[in-house]
Image (cartoon, rainbow, N blue to C red; front, side, top):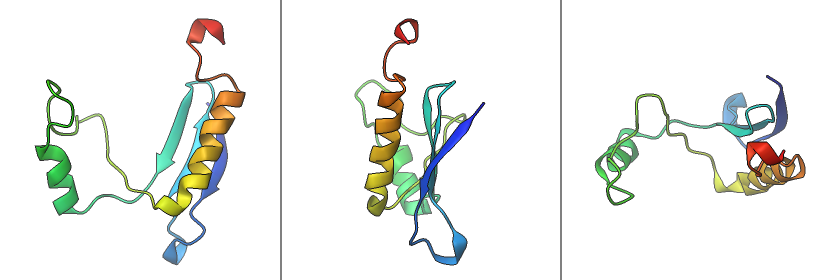
Length: 93
């Protein structure tokens, strides 16, 4: 596994750092962020966002928050994934 560091939030206090990486082998964008507060997590857990899809966060998944000021870094991650051809089906890479 090779993680390509793409950026971190330069404005995070105390060295905290929502961070974005690209992992080409798995074709994944990896995001580190802040945990949601209890009110936000409850709202996420109680809402059926997609009809017919169970509400809540599965045990093998997590919710993180990142500031909107990181949009340029997220774009950089998406652009890097596209340049590497990771958005195409595996058989086409």
